[in-house]
Length: 569
Image 1: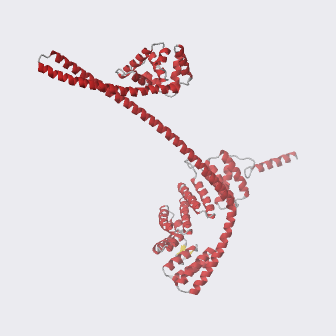
Image 2: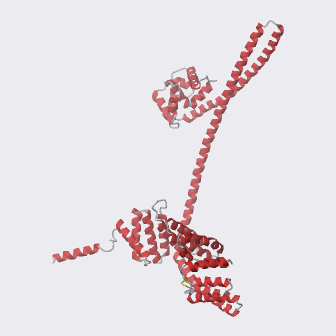
């Protein structure tokens, strides 16, 4: 008895482990098996059930945590397909939108075929809602991703759906412009038969525009290439063909043949749309024949067909609106939130760019002003140097004339030399005034360097090391090595190349010269530098002048020039 019980229990366990995946746990293998099973049944047009809803929700949850973008996208597509078959439109659209958002179009392995299907399903919902602009945009996106997936059949199908939408809104010119290009593209892709089977609306559009020859060309392509028309009996599997053929024949004034095709449309049409088209064609035909009674008869029948079709359409639209109301409202809320987020992002981006532009502009402005100042100083130095050289030459010439005059014996010669000396003295005096004027101009520019030193003092005046050194100077104490290291680190925090520049000067600076430069660059005055380095103030000036002369191979004009140069090292 115990053995039988064990066998029974073991068999039950084995049976429990076979069949469908265990619903209490989910892993990658199970998620893959469920996805493949639902995808296969969806592809075979089998109706998906509430149980598929439960399983696909768990697959979506699993892939949201551990799946790739492609796996999440496919899971949402299949979940939306389940809701579509369950007639839960809002949930279906939400699932399709989540699938679109899950796609990673930057990845090389992106499943564009699934992304195209997601947009295709979304397009159907938007068409049902009569949202034409949104439908057109979604369908164009569907076509784009179908082409990326190299799914030419669905791409061409999407283009012809757009042609049908143009026809529904009476946009015949657009159809006339686009249909020929679509035919050519379809032929290049080997899909002429598929394209030809969609030509009836294009034929009718050309008839409405009065382009009968073009309509006849399209009709010839439809009859020869679509595979839907028996050229022996002129029978077609699509009743819309009879209406298009009848309208074309009527436009060509072949009323007898047109009547035959309109009556075939009326006989073989399966819904009120077919009958409405047939009645309209027959009404126009009898109007052309001037058969008033028959024209009135079919006008009345057309009105009845329109009313019936309208009632049916109205009922369907009410049902669709009831199903999609919550979705539309949610979409509008999400759209407004997205718009608000985009506005905030644009404002933040604009602010960042504005600040960056202002800072960059200020930087360039400061650099430009500093460059202009340096150019002015260099120009003033050159002009002063040239004026000094000219003055020296003229003074030398004056001295030579004076010696010659003192040595002259001839009165006439002496008088001529005296005249030349007088002229030379006047020129020398004028040149001396010019040198003084240029020197004053240069001194004025140098005073800006002193203002720069004051600015440095304001910049570093609140730092601990500056305050400590100021206190040392007041007490007459010298600065220690660690104080200079603190200055170096402080300056290098804003000027990383300082040490490199100081060491690269030729000839190299001595340790004392480096200390003087560091103290000057933080705004210390000459008197303070002298006390901190235990030297005389005149020695500091000599050090700065010597530094300038070593670097520039000439003496500074005044102490302001050497101080400015040291600050700019």
